[in-house]
Length: 260
Ligand code: HPA
Image 1: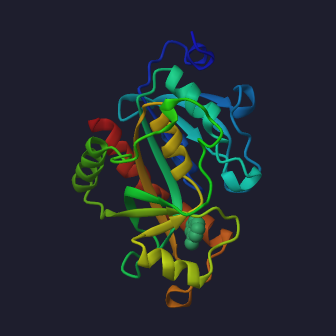
Image 2: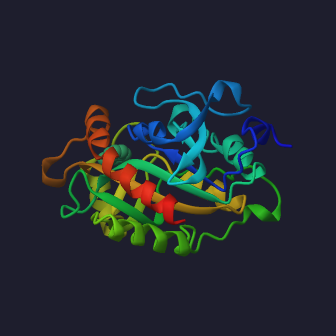
């Protein structure tokens, strides 16, 4: 039995979700929850920055057993793009098949306003890092076509329709951070086909695909990206706007898990 399974106390979740900046409230909606601090889990990252918790919650949402990872470590904290590898590996060995990744992101499209929710259809890696660098073996040549699972995307779109929630769709650009982008970089990201920009998610998608998990991604748009309509994003804004949208994100996720 894997380390993690032994802590699940007989539950058999097949889906897990990683909560992004200030979306932690969703973890409180889990019923019959067992809460395990990351520090009790081998290799799980203990987040160091404000707005990010660090606990694994196993319980039910919408009648489905799920795992919630409240808090993630980011590549920019250490320079290690594979910082979430042990957690993702542990989820895989514990029988998880679907991994939902959420984040806060800046909008590259003036029509996608702060407070919007965006379904990630694809990503562009602008970080200069890859979590699989240094790994050996053919399984690291991971195909990234349809990395964001078309079947899960269809289910998220259906959940948004059922809840009458507006859902944008687009391409997430992974920027290393922790500094925000310059307006010139944002102009480039728009030109190369980006819709939103953020500092997480893409490395976890790459790792999850490496381990054969199905992935879905959702962004809460907390701000217009640097330079758009004069925007100059800040971490404080990311946290406060993320918290405002978290109820709608929770509604969408609850419907998604209910119908999964
Ligand atoms: N840029 C990068 N990451 C972000 C942003 C942004 O504008 N907003 C929230 N996370």
